[in-house]
Image (cartoon, rainbow, N blue to C red; front, side, top):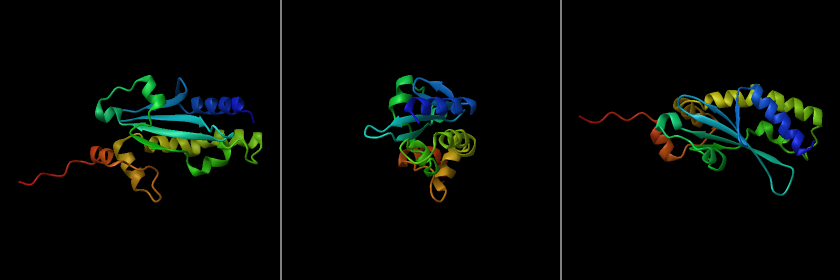
Length: 153
């Protein structure tokens, strides 16, 4: 499958899943977070990575710029779920028809549920607490998401 065809199929599946294209990324805004999907092609092969970025924009009141959504890694960052590795490697033995079908399936079965789990602060905490963790939270992000401990009287 050519990279152009792969991107066309990915873009169409993302649009059908309710994500909005913004420059080279796909985004979904929620009251507490903004979740971004970004395909990144390897410089040495026909392998793609799927960057999944989360900003706590609704929780911090920060307004994201277009440039920041494309170039920054967000407040929380992860790569694609392992179930997607073969379909993102254009040199793998997956046929073009199977790759197209699996991309279509990945959105409702894998990506949309993940995006929805990452849509709130409490969802991020639950995702970080799963076994294995779906995301890793840096200490400053975890502190922001955890409710304040009651102060001693």
